[in-house]
Image 1: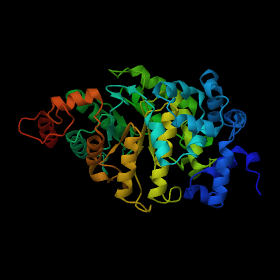
Image 2: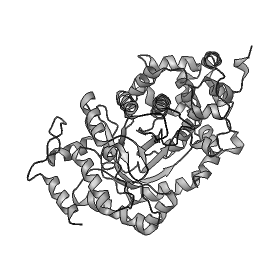
Image 3: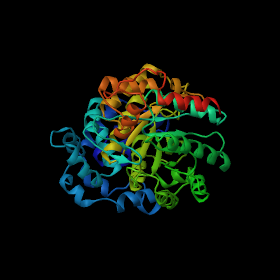
Image 4: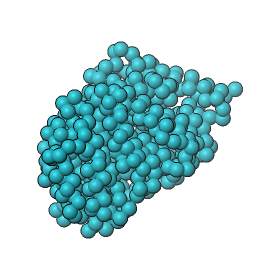
Length: 456
């Protein structure tokens, strides 16, 4: 009989994980259901203090580990310092754990603690616990307030065509989307093209006084150069991961992120708030795909990326759950589970978590899976999701969520956009004061915007 209690934490966490194709292919997953169940029972009995004594990647070799260790708030940890992982799971689901308590606890939890607790939870536990957490950020509008649900307009175009980008943006605005960010993934990484798109979005927002923010999703070093050249950068984007080696694969380090954070802060382009200027993207499988997971299971090393994110107080964090392929998440069931895990861990650690609820065409999934995932995340208090025309990104060639999906979720759960954006939607005749979409009609201000685009 295996002695599960004496296994290294890394091994125990991997065996306790819900089945994922990536962990199985890496050779670290449980052998079978019994193996997984025994690992979970042993994990439930592990004291949380063990996570402060046994680092999954050595402190001396990894700057993410050092960030987690050196930034740990022992005063915030004190109320749960005598807990086991099982105790933490039970506490998070109890009536004692309200929004105020969980906000106070967040600096005292390490990503590994959050991941461990999630491995003892079924889907409804992940939804319930995450729904209690409130994380509010602000730039030109305010995200994360109770009763609110936001969306990113993703107006990608295979030629970076201005009319195509603006037409997709208009489509989203007509459906009440775009309060999280208008964010373009550019095809061309030339600085001239990046600056052109940046100015295009900034002019749209400024001319029509839209209380939202824009972002060109390029490498952080490109954004730094755009800032040096005087481009109107709202948010600074970067993909990040949970180990120093994986971040090197993205071409970044904590020092580079710090430089970009300070440069973007210096622009002071926010109106409602000026402190939240970073937009980070993550996703299970990123570290494993770059041979930088160090034998840690996908979900736990993903949670470590959230330590990097929260250090920079981001405006948005986005887990691109199903984008990387079936070698990491095989089907719709695995995508849904990973979505709920990422959202729970991110919010518990104090992050404004959003999800790109998505899948590539070679994953065994369909839009019904995405509908279920979207609805579950809405119930869990997800900050925002993607709005892509027809749910089909014609540039990145994957399936996501549409403007219709955002409108559906707000309607079914009785949620509204960010308050500043909602007021703008009402002034433009897009929403009524109850958040219901209105049909376009002659004289509607937004139609004038549409006419202007048609003349480009």
